[in-house]
Image 1 (cartoon, one colour):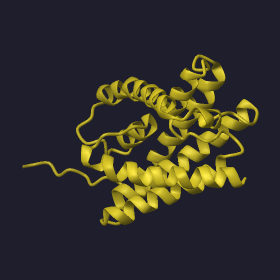
Image 2 (spheres, helix red, strand yellow):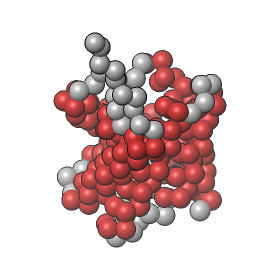
Image 3 (tube, helix red, strand yellow):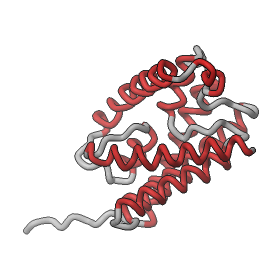
Image 4 (cartoon, one colour):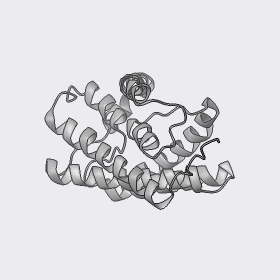
Amino acid sequence: MKGAIKAAIADGVLTFMWIFCASSLGGATFNPTATAAFYAAGAGGGDSLISAALRFPAQAAGAVGGVLAILEVMPMQYKHMVGGPSLKVDPHTGAIAEGVLTFIITLAVLIIVLRGPSNPLIRNWLLAVSTVALVVAGSSYTGPSMNPANAFGWAYINNKHNTWEQFYVYWISPFIGAILAAWIFRFLFPLPTKQKKA
């Protein structure tokens, strides 16, 4: 558990820095479930369903590139320590865990980003703390990933990307969790209705 906490804190620090740096990219998303959730919540900006879906392969390809870059710069004596998310329980339990964790992080992200504090430092800190808490909570189940593209990147490198378990646990369940979170967010915070011009 001690290793999981260290990994979660490192993940939180990296998430904080990544969100802080990536926020200047103007709407770039690196998680397919976030793309789907923002679209389902009605907060996808001008994205159509097609443009949102076109991001998924790009996000997965970017994750593969990211994993390759990590492995390229990682000193040899530490390479055995990295491997991405991995299933530590049976597939059904893993799918439930990944779906619930993705539901929670997605609902937290939607609330923090769309209804949370206006101060970007506080907002990023809240996102990082949420990530750390969920990584610790899911460490004995799935890794966890909460990001299908990230899971795909590691699975591709480890030649496990084309298995049913990978698809079921790290793609289907997270998408279900993210869409449910978006619908609940939309129920709790309805979109303003547009007034018709006379």
